[in-house]
Length: 364
Image (cartoon, rainbow, N blue to C red; front, side):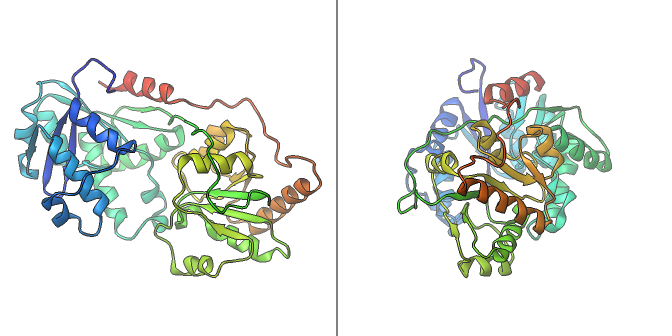
């Protein structure tokens, strides 16, 4: 949107209130997102985020770039600096409160919200403690105040619409699949064994990603193949983390990799293992499909919507099925038969241009 001629502003929520950035400020903040080093945090940032120095530094950049600021209760006054009509596009799950929607409506602005999924309400046992009621309040505010809602899949749209209806109102909704933008493959991570074949599991380590079933499979195998787990440790049960800390045979953790390093691994893996219990989209699956990497995935409706019959689908909790499929794929690789999981073709890989065309067609 920075390349569009229309006026552009960004509303940034901090611990102390709201900041308003103009086009120049937004461009400067995005430059840091794209890799420009962040300057030191200011005093307010250090006070606000002592345990999150990166966030403190990012907020300092936003404060220095702001054309106006206001406490939470002064949002109406802040928005009066803007033209009397416009469109507020919220791409995350922040700022979803009745105060924000009321202030926007009072200034004549339309509000369009991207709701990624309803997983906290559909699968509360997979959500971090305390996040379910917070998400429910946000979705209730969207139900009451948003003018339009965008989801990234039809499966997510249907699930979100169910909860919006329970909250009292379903705003007009549209679907805009996320773009699949493959990074160029770079060098492998330092110290990575490039000679031994491996399966790849990509995603934050948390209950929803279902790493436990892979640990169960590998524990059953007498001569397990190599499994490379890429992703940071999120919130997870102590039992799962203890199992990983025990360094199971043939299992490696590689957190903190760059996009180029991840792309290099995807280019060399035998298959992507994607045993998630719930997903709103599933970027790793689509990235794998875009470059012909075989995928073994949970049998989720959202995966079938996006990837058709490209993956091999297995029940997310069927350890035996996962074991047999992985063993078969391993034997095929050892016998030089190529992929035992055929790289099926013919699925549509959405682009970011497709995504933003759908969003911009929908908004206001």
